[in-house]
Length: 292
Image (cartoon, rainbow, N blue to C red):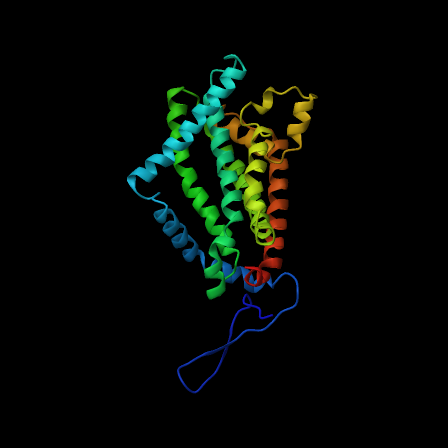
């Protein structure tokens, strides 16, 4: 099998044409010293491909931007009414802000998974007719998910201001929490993209996983309000997203310094998932052309 990921070698010729020689390589992870620079060299391609995709989906016009704001707000209202009915109206005064902050962050995470899963299958023509690191495709979907996430922050800032919640320097603790979710989602997204190539029905199964994962995450409730030794607290403790979302909520909603254990746990999960997902993807990516 020819290796379409190894860099081309130019052979000198008398004429103006250049001859490119593609060598086969052994099974395993490609040389990162050549793979990563090649991936970085396509950063502008990733950005332009993300913009073109959003433009094709009408997300760059006025109505598309308006829907990006209304959709998360309406989703937050639905979950607010659901929780309000289940709890008979018994919740903290700033519950709506907490709900929106966690829901927006989790939506960003689930979007990375769902969009990355179909990134390879949906770009079969690009894979078969061009030479590029395949990791470019799920990364493009992550950029798209981030662009869709930005309008959600506008909604949250408006709700935060209306409820007159405090602002302070502790709000910047939300940045490491967001980076943790980004890395964790990217790693799991790379795994989903790989699995979708081998199991075509994986994308049909994934929405159920993300929906169950939502109810096992501290989105519809405050992580700090759980009893320490309850069964629910133990179940939530096994969720890698729990410390990340807990840190995010403490910083944005309550303007307090999060627990250091949450930061350490979240970063550990994020790094493990990102490294594992990246290695799994690039180890299998040269088989994608055959299986497509």
